[in-house]
Length: 540
Image (tube, rainbow, N blue to C red; front, side, top):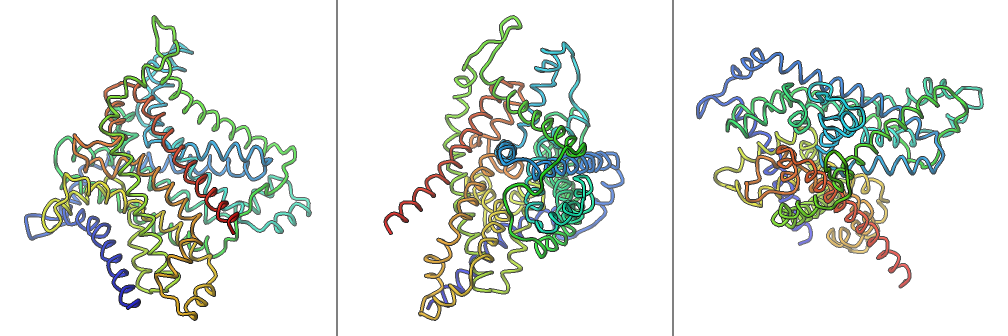
């Protein structure tokens, strides 16, 4: 009985991944190359490539520039971080984590607030009227938006290095500069490549930043968005998304290769200083660059808060909360819907990811390694690609979901699967197999092991996956923009519309509300979880 139910559950989980991840991806490719009802051709693909070379060059130019700048800055911040005192490390990590909970286009809003034609710096402080739009506007805001995640990845890679080798280099008289150039950088080569590839993929797929501050500078992602939203041409949108995904797939191949090499050689991550910096000019330069980036992050979020709580009369700013009152009508219908969608998608994603990790790593279901690869697909494809796939896959029988809340929640849920599965899988790999073997010897069934052993042992990972899923769902945009009907909008779409209409004070207030909700949820989740664990310890 237990084996039959396990096989049934495993089959249902595999089928759900095929239907809600693999099928939408295939639907986009089918739509891109379909000519008529039954025939397929590559001619439209080649014709678009030849007719839009400038657009493709612009997209690759932005992505490559963002990749190089982000990697260089993230590496500088990470190297400074691991040599800094613990108090400074905590401060830096706080601001890096803070920037991960913001909506995807808040950097663009801050950029307009600071450097726009009426910007706080360009107009109010310097009296300039500059045009902030175009190539460098996109590059600067994408770089600032991606730098936190990239820095945290590199910090984790550096803190997992062998401390003894670093101490040996220092004892042999290596300077800080020599230590970085000959020891640290070569040892985290795989992590650097991973960061570069992930940044390239994210930049290539980003359409919200170019849409807001790109001006006349268009890229493939914005063109795909316009083909779907403005012109109602899903076939052309599918074709453009396929062009976007090809270099992304190539980059992801190298990402998997380098990531596997990194995982095979990595050790447990340690907190604290990796080395003690002396008065090295190189390290002081890294510190100067780090605090400059931190200042930009502070200016970014400070400008959002400042604009949300001030207004102007005859050029003079004064304190007011009117923006929060004015934004309340926008929350009446969308706030509860957004919270419900985010909670459901985060909870279901954690449940599915925990089952997938348990069946693959604990029960050793071999075919679930293939399902694990399928679950990673939403990680590499653009959000607009995944959303368009849902439109094409579920607009008719047998699953006609278009226009329902279900299609939005399902899209958000399976978009969360890659990171949730990675978090739960890492927890499963770290568990002692003898615990489950002993349970089996005592007659325990698989579902008892899952409920009584696996879930309690992976509690912290589950909390992390839940918080990440909730924040990602609250701030998601690209994958659901094609799925949400006008009367069923979520907060990020409302925010996008407000920015598009030029109501920057209201957009700043709504951004503050969004970030506040995410911070409160994260705090409550970890605090209540730790308190419950502490209560169980006392009762024992």
